[in-house]
Structure formats: structure tokens, C-alpha cells
Length: 323
Image (cartoon, rainbow, N blue to C red; front, side):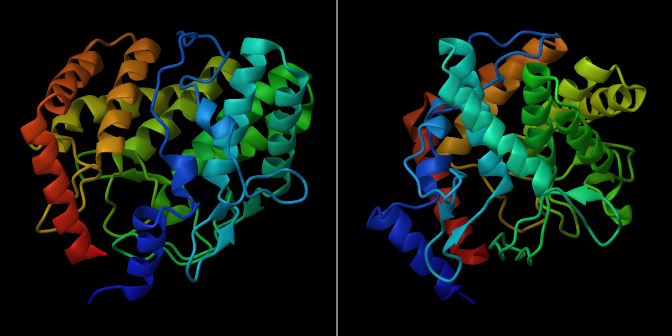
């Protein structure tokens, strides 16, 4: 059945170009030039477009995303963390105290909105239903929010030496090491592959961009704490990515996830570009050139006008049948 509410919301955002959540998400993915292994400095992607988000905001300067339709304006913990990381990067580039102030404001929001879920795990909840092809019912949480929240909190802790930011990161990290069946965001499959799941659905769909972004939070936590559990999670997750990354390659484009649908969920042009940038950064952080090799392959797909058009048609058909 066609989801008419979803179609109305998408029409207002994509077709008539009303200001929407897309104005936040769909900037140009870029590797931050200062990204380096073993150093917690500027975040690994620049997020300049996130830092310059035009709004709306709440009365404390926390960004809201306007999803239109029945969802309307909402706090999105992932977007809030990215806004904070983008401003942190600008602060590190320009030494602008206003950018640091915005980052601290976000870190405070993250600490204050870290709540226990039904299983006693600390999470950042999304308080609205979301139309994945399996609807996520409010409240829902995500490894992506956990990872990027951790990345910001640890950076603000290093800047301020205020312990509650580190304590918030520690609480959020524990959820990263807890399996989904116990209220966390970690899934171990039958082949002992370790996945950090952006969306908690059954069966898991292994969204690629969310897994990688979440993993950077694990890396940041490992660099600062030298925690053995973080080292194991980092190592096992990299092992899974190396083993399964080609499953996300359909021969001419990358896949958004590994959902078990008759038609594969191909990445949009934006997410294909994001995958390439994320793999470049994984090469920096892990020192493993395999990720660069796959990024080169996916970059070659992007250069083909035929492949780009083919991917666009594939994605459009998927949307018709599954949303």
C-alpha cells in the first residue's frame, strides 16, 4: 500500500523545495583535512554545512528539523550531535568562541537528554515515528546517535575538563557494547559478525553509513580511554566491514543497507558519495588500505553517467514499492 502521508511529506521537501530536514542532511560529504589517526581533534568530516544550518532552532539554540506532514518539527539527536561537531570543527579552525559555545550547548543537551530505555541502557531517543520500510515507532534509538553523541561529548570534555561530559560518553558507550536483545545497538549474526545498527529492526538491515559513523564514536572512546572493550568492538567491527563490504556493491553502485527485500535498497547519489568519504576516513583511522581500494571502485561508478542514471531509476522504483 502506498503511504500517502509519506508521499505528501516527500513532495513538499523534494518537489516544491520547502525548507525541510533535507536542508540539514544533504550537504556535500567531505573529509576534514585535519583528520589523523590517534588524535582527537577536529571531527573526521568537516560538517561545515551542518554548523551553518539556517534553522529552525528552539529557544536555547538547539536545531530542530522540519519533517513536514504529521511529523513536523522535531529534535533529532543525530542532527543535534552533527551540528555540535560542525561547530566544534569551526572552533578548531578559527578559534571562534561562539562556535565553541554552540558545541557546549549541544553537549549539555546531549547530557540532559540521555535517558534509560526499557532495558536500562542509556540512549538518545527519537520521539517521533519514522518511515523506514519498517516504521520505527517512537521512542526509538540508534547506534548512529550513540556514536556521534560520544564523539562530541569526548571533544567537549577535552576542551573543558568537565567530568559530566566524559561520564555521559561512558554511559552511551555501554549501550554500544550491549546486544540488541538486551536493549543495546550491537548485533552479532550467526557468522559472528559484529554490527552496530542505525535502525533497530528485525531482521537487522545493517545500514552502512550508520555503522561506519557509529564506529568512529567507538574509535574516539578507545583513543581517549584505552578501554579493552572498546578495542575489541573496534577490531571486530573492522573485521566485519572488511568481510562484508563487497556485499554492499551491486556491480555498479553501493547499497544503502542489506535489507532482505526482493529489490535491493540502493544508495542515493548523496549516500553513495558519503560511503566513499567514510571509507577514505576509515583508511586513515585503521591504516588499512583495503577501504581506500573499495572507495576507488565506488568512485569509478560515480564517474559513469550510465551508472548514475541506472542507480537513480533503481532507487526510484525501490521507493515506490517499499515506502
